[in-house]
Amino acid sequence: MASSAASTTLPQTPDALPGVSPWMRRLATLASLTVLPSCLWRLALAVGIPMGWGPGSDLHHSYYPGRESLVLVLVTLVQEGLGLLSLGLVRRWGEQLPGWIPRLGGRRFHPLLAVVPAALGALALTGITSLGAAGWSEVNAANPDAPTGLALRIFSLSYVPLLLWGPLLGVLTVAYWRRRRVHG
Image (cartoon, rainbow, N blue to C red; front, top):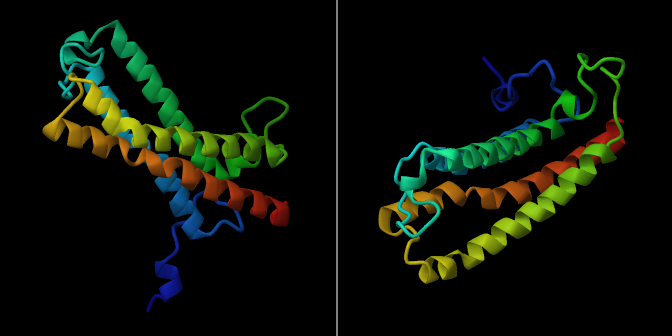
């Protein structure tokens, strides 16, 4: 008979760290996934799928695919990459340089090298997404080419998860800082 503690733990990954709770690993995974819906929405637009923007908008599907698609793909790759960095706050590669880096591989780095950018990122993301969400209805009302109806709901459902990214990153950053102070 399995214990209840065993059923609540995540499987250990090769780069799992002592002192990282399963709860923090779940939060890191969730933080990294908050960017996925907006990235998928942007990629759909990049390949020319109509996403509800009118002909007067730069996001109208008639502009895609094309050179403009490269910008959307680049933004998506950067955003997805930054989202995945949340995992570094609970994984070994977030504390020491990978072994494949010549001469430096395997060395631990100072916690502030991760904490400062992560904390600044958490603050910036929280501010940007909150302001964007607060002003969205005004922007939408003032722009006759903005999505409405089902397209607006799809857009909103794609971007609402980003509101969680900054706060989750903040929680992960504080936990990382505390753990590194205790466990080195």
